[in-house]
Amino acid sequence: MKIAHVQDLLMNFSKWHETAGGKQIASELERFSRGLDAHRDLSISEFCEILQRSSAECNGNNGASKSTKAKPKPDQEKIQIAVHDLQILLDRSTHPDLTYEVIDAEIDRLDGLLSKDEGMEVAKELGISTSGKSKIAVLQEVGRRASARKSLHERGQRLELSATES
Image 1 (cartoon, rainbow, N blue to C red):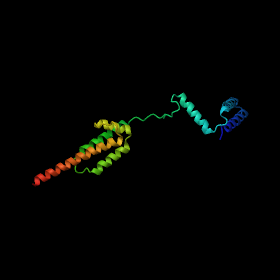
Image 2 (cartoon, helix red, strand yellow; image 1 turned 45 degrees about the vertical axis):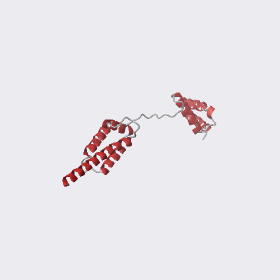
Image 3 (cartoon, rainbow, N blue to C red; image 1 turned 30 degrees about the vertical axis):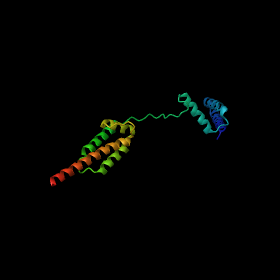
Image 4 (cartoon, helix red, strand yellow; image 1 turned 135 degrees about the vertical axis):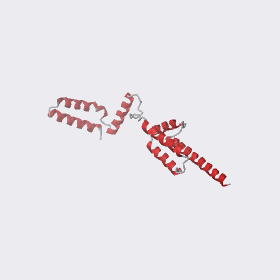
């Protein structure tokens, strides 16, 4: 569809409003239609692109599209819960009832729960360096630490057992 068709529709609406007694709206619709004269031969999508570029230039971003959505702030409550849960995981890593599968499941659960920024905040709270790391890399580091503590504890238990058997 071309802008010329839109102009025809606007003129028909204008006549309809004028007949119904809406002289002000009829005048505005006619003026709008005449304002589109320079773009009569463009398709609607071509015209929309011109409007978007013009709007972007007026807003100062030189045609580059910028997201107008504000970045959501990290949820402090989720961060504190995650820090608490991970601290418990690290503390429990020496208990025999904690399996490596449970450690992995907890890391996966928190990966789905936290945004990237929240994951980075959790890392800071736990004293884990975040430079150049993704959220999952940080969470996997906590899992690695828990697994390493568990492994060391299990080895220590085996050494104690073998020492008492000798």
